[in-house]
Length: 355
Image 1 (cartoon, rainbow, N blue to C red):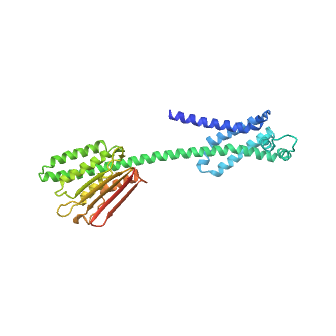
Image 2: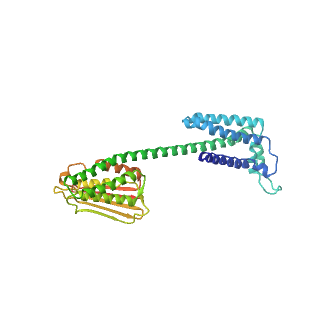
Image 3: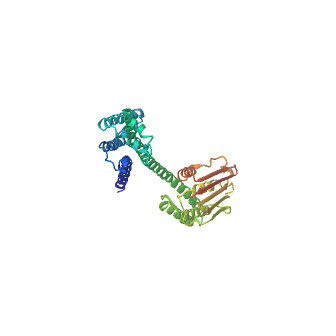
């Protein structure tokens, strides 16, 4: 249906173009109520034929194959041969339009200084050949420009489709990496509680089930409500607090209106995971501060943690962080700011998203 509509639109565009051009071509004769010479329909038909020869054959088979010189020579040959045929068969009304333009439209008692020069030009076969070749060149230029533009648009549409498919496949790959990574960390947290025979183990399992429900039913979507993503973060932080022996310095602050806003899933969690991983000191104390504010069409996220002494020499990037950085480049190429600072004592991530 879409293809048929597209073809119909193209047909209408071509039809309107030829009707407009025909009116312009026949205007001098129609305006003066003169009989249209028999050579005029032949010239007009020749222009239509040359247009579509160029459009369907010469441009795609020669010009778009990067053989420009061959294309120019073939066009000149066709124009010259067609022009000679028309001038020999139907001489020499090709300059009728020029005569009309030169003719002054005022009472006949005034002398006409131009008609003598025009009549001399009309009797010159070289001039008539140049005129008809110039006229016949118009469909070549028009059809070449139109076909090149259409091919360019087709290639652009194809390029966008390929890029979208590539982006989607890359995002799916990143998500498949991220899910096992998250599950591994969460199971470690619950194992730690179980090893201590903590009464918080059952609550931790419930929290993990909520997290996994989100991973199964929401994380595979392109966009999720921001409210659900924030609820996911709250459950994750709650799970970490249950695991930690000292979580008094674990702070989570969320402000702003999260209604009617959507976001790609799992954008923030890797930064938060990283903060908990490296934010514990020798005595098991954890220093993690998470701030997320929503202002108009932007989200400002900041997570900060103190680096535990035994973590200082270790790389603090990891699979999850690299994944989310790659996702940000794909999803928000021109509308995000990511700053990471590591002064040896404190690790800070600031992410600004402009929705």
